[in-house]
Length: 255
Image (cartoon, rainbow, N blue to C red):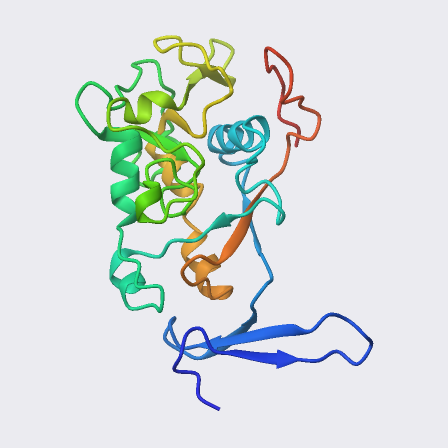
């Protein structure tokens, strides 16, 4: 048996009358390994340490129906590897995930995110005690559900952002620190109020929060041997008591 071909599958029969499982083996991550092909793993976001990133992802997951991007294994995201590795896969896809991020967060000058000056910063999360503002987008740029990925290039978002408006078409939020020391994720009123027909979200957010919330994703992708278009979902804890269907969504994260 060879493990050189990324999409090779091996049927595995469970004699207890379970469905047939397909095991896929590869060497894409350096050393050979196998996974159950149709299993969708869940990436657990550290909601307690990075509440703003978690709240933003939860909001877009739970309010933007019927897609519910990455909410459960039934409505998963599809992984898009970086351009160099993606181009070598059987799909031949070669789009860079940074291109998706550019369309949602930066794009044309009239559409790029202008960070709110009252965006909360978290220098305490850095060894250098520094931080700056950034654009947090959901669905993630390295997925086929990113609103920055055109349908013509394989994008699976039902309404990708247009050339004319780009990231302005997303739900707009920002994190703010209140006088009592607590933090809140607010609607960014510099933009039109959300209609909830949007298919993406972008948030003015601390770079430390934004980047560190997903810092473990590389090892997650390696552990579960995610290849091009493999599915996964995002597990977000602490918002079980929140009602995403309310006209005004107000909720507190629970431990």
